[in-house]
Amino acid sequence: MYKVSASRIEKLLALALVCSVWTQLRVVSVIGIPELLLLYIGMCGKCSTTETIREYQRTQIQYVKLIMAVIPFGIAWNILTVNNHMQMVHDLFAFVFVGFLILKVFKKVKIYENLLGILYSFFVFQTIVNIIYFGMYAVGMGMYYGERFAGFSSDPNQLGEVLFLVPWMALYFLKKIKEQSPQNVRSCRVICVICVISSIAIGILTESDTFIISSVLALVIYLLMETVKIITTGKGNKLLIVIDILILVFFIIKFNDIGMFIDNYYAETAQDANQLDTRKMVWLHGFQAFLNSPIVGNGPGAYSGNWFAFGNMESHNTYIYIMMDYGVIGLFALLSMLFAAWRGTRRAKSSEMSAAFISFLVFNWFHSFHRMPLFWFFIYLFISVGIAEWYPNKKEKLSVSG
Image (cartoon, rainbow, N blue to C red; front, side):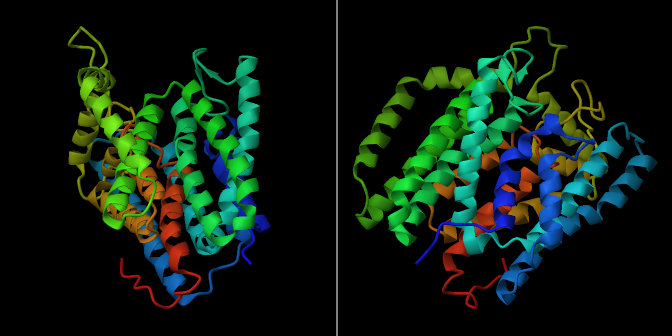
């Protein structure tokens, strides 16, 4: 009989994911509670034993190593050309340390073996933390410039990245629990409902546009995928088709308002043409920095800017950030891992996780979180969803070439 439980290491991993956005509580530079937890996990966990799993893990680990391998070349080219290294030391230490944690934990933690146990622990911890967040908000603590709630995060968007995925992980979790352990559905549903409602509420308090956009996008994608599944298989709740039609009508009626909202998000309402502090300009200058060293990048650092490239400003886009720091080699490694994550969600035939993954890609189009363990572990989580689907009965049958 399937049991919803997790070992100490797996519970610590779930706790590390919950508090991975607590950037205000870091002890030294990039080292805080989640980093210390992951370091402990990497040192104490046991390596995977199944040969196909080890090979699959090696494939993903090589991509992380590939990004780390181009760092010296990027730094050398930076020094020889623009010699811009104001934030290089900080970002170098941040990414190397995060890369070390990723390599250790990827080798040690077998998420796919007890994915549901890890998710259950995650929901329990996140619910407890959400209650703490509500208490902080009630007394005016954890506010970002006195307006937006950020909790223990330095930026409300950091908190938003972990919260917007909660509903979709919960839907996936409950579906699998119903299949594998129906006697536990009721208790699991209670904790999931509390966690989802409180996470959405906290997400709204962050006033993060990206949280709203990613959440709405995930909902639309999920409904569309489920509708296609109902039409093609004839199975499922036909009410979803009605909901899709209503959403389509809403988008048609509010098309102009939605367009204005998107335009305002992309370009701030600066009337002075010299005030180009917009995401578009930051992305453009980040891309210009990438062109300075397109193969190996410029090394770790912030090379975008409001007015020109190499203005010591972040690009606010994970993919452009990877390009300007690690070149096309780093981008290839990242896209390879993202493709493996997409295959994982599709192999699991999970509309919930597929929608969450696409929205995850969109969320990171507006922000740069690759220096945080959370970004890489969500990728590994999407990959593990696919592995968990076949692992119990098909250990030796999967081709791991991808």
